[in-house]
Image (tube, rainbow, N blue to C red; front, side, top):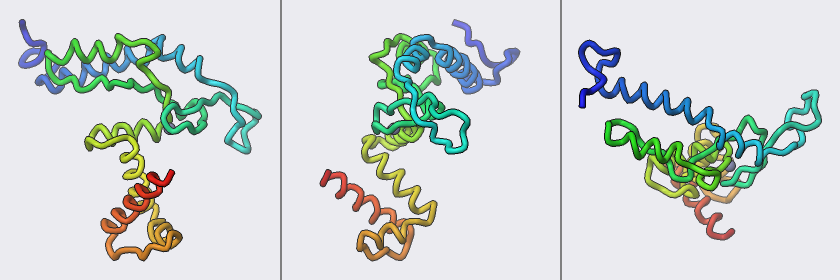
Length: 179
Ligand SMILES: [Zn+2]
């Protein structure tokens, strides 16, 4: 079979071609009627989180991972089994099947935070619960709230931020166990 990339084609190499193909398939996913039906089914009116908003209520949803309630703009439809990578011809069939051969049972409506925790978990080969904790600790350091957070829990903050992050993760894991 002739490859569609290379000299005399619009794509310099396979990387460029598969970037293009992933973009096309992502559009197919964003137009997917099963996805849109799921959103319509799950959404309901919630109090407007914007106190200056003109409407009393807005469309919202309950995240299927963290159970929090968010405006629908914060929602993402996630594949429970990720579509995975699409970098070579042999990946095409599996990728398209995982992406598009789905019913509502294969999908879940989740918040942006959970979506990014799942991506983090996937990337680092850890559980979703652990990823949430890792991301929480990173956020505390980034927002410079780590020292206060540790002192509030009667923990003497370590001298470096890397070690404070470990302290935070350990404490969050303990709290998780106590739940
Ligand atoms: Zn969530």
